Image (cartoon, rainbow, N blue to C red; front, side):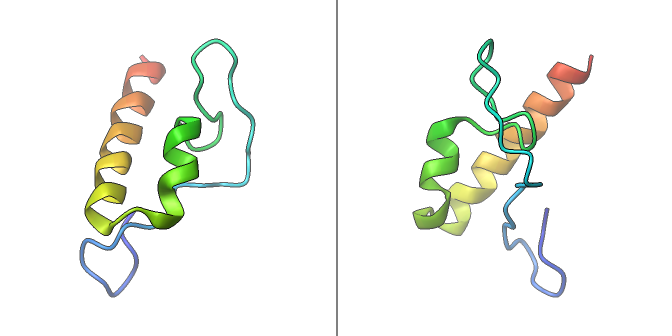
Length: 64
């Protein structure tokens, strides 16, 4: 989730499947919380990278 040509630049994980799962509160497409989605546009690159780390952990946990 790093933009081509720019090292460590966070790119939104949104895949346009924008439906929140009522059971876990995560977007079914990008695995972000509503709070993470709403703050994304104003978040610093470091904050975005932290969100992407959380997304990766959730994907892994939910795929097991």
